[in-house]
Amino acid sequence: MSYIWQDFNIKTMPAETIVFRDGVFCPELSTLDSPEISKNYDLPVHIIYVGKLSDKNNLDINIPENVKNQTVFLSVRVTVDYGAEFLITIKNSGVESELRGFVTIQNRGNVKFNVDAHHLAVNTGIFVKTRLVAYKNSTSEINGTAHIYKYCENARSDIQMSAIAEKSAKIIFRPAQKISSIPESAAHGANIAHYTAPQIEYLHQSGLNDTDIDKVLKEAFLNDID
Image 1 (cartoon, helix red, strand yellow):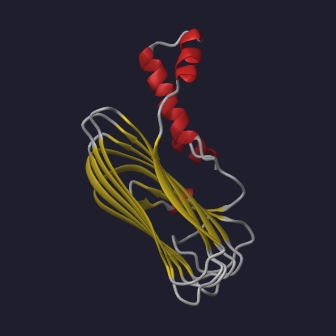
Image 2: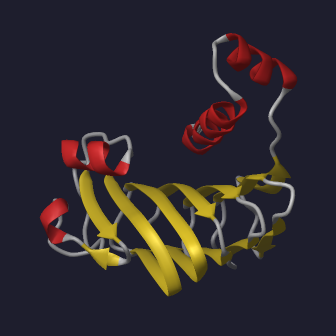
């Protein structure tokens, strides 16, 4: 799976992989023959979605009720140059199954992005972090909603989003939760990140100019998954 690391800049681990490029499932890069999770696997499942977005794009992830104790990772790295909509729908019906997602978006145009996460059984986990770099004159609408339904107790849910924005960029954040059962944990949040003076001073002392510093700090922001 070294191709994924070299071409996509995504960390891989021992896992069954489902790879999408520019919205198209790539069986030649995947270890699974189908983009569907249909059974339990000995390894985690790693869903990788990369490329440029335009028009309307959808990614549906379903952990069915016959799948138990399954770990699923989601890595999304996409760019928008003009205009695009992107919807990720996550349905977790697998008891003690967990999805951990990390989404990065570089937007130079207009993007509307939505994560719709559904806890459909007891003891399910869904955690999604979104990182946005919003370039000048861009418009970004980032939405994330976790649904914890009735009789789906002890859910573990977290929807987080953050951005670095150039001065003329416009950003709308809408994180939310709709809770009908008592969760084990439930959180959501949004923030705008800023470069710090010590970071900039350190990089200046290292010999970087302002353009290089901006590039380095944006890359660090996008690749910081903690």
